[in-house]
Image (cartoon, rainbow, N blue to C red; front, top):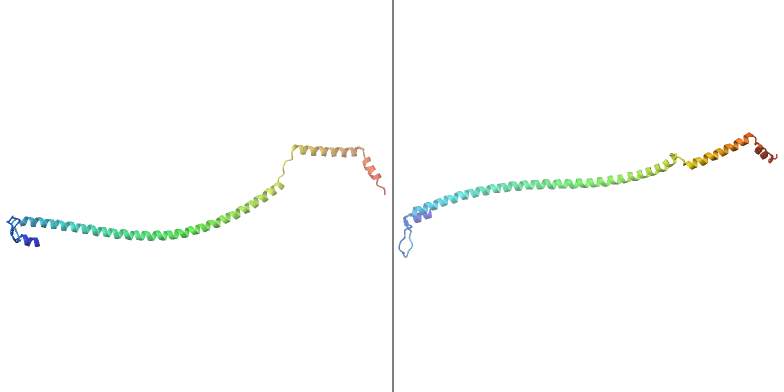
Length: 165
């Protein structure tokens, strides 16, 4: 508006002789003013677009910030519960490890006792030499008994003779 008033009076862009005082020019001022009006409308349009983009970006930023706050709160809560769960699991693990150790020691004691009892209960086959020696001793005893029964009963009499009543 100021430029319109200044240049709108006459031939503003016409060259004039140098004068000691400054005065408004006339003439082709309409072209400049038109150009300036187009620039002003372009700038206004661009300013409106930038302001709209800025508001949209600000809205997006606010939404993202709010979502991040919610996600952070959820993750902190989840971390807190996972920490409690981890402590409970560690405690349970220690308890179960202790139970396992006591059960293992009990099992070791039972297996040790079983191995001792097994030695007593399970018949081991005798080696051939031992069986042969026992059989020969048994046969020798039977031969002696047979000799005594067949007539060499003197052994009993002699024993009786030494016993005097």
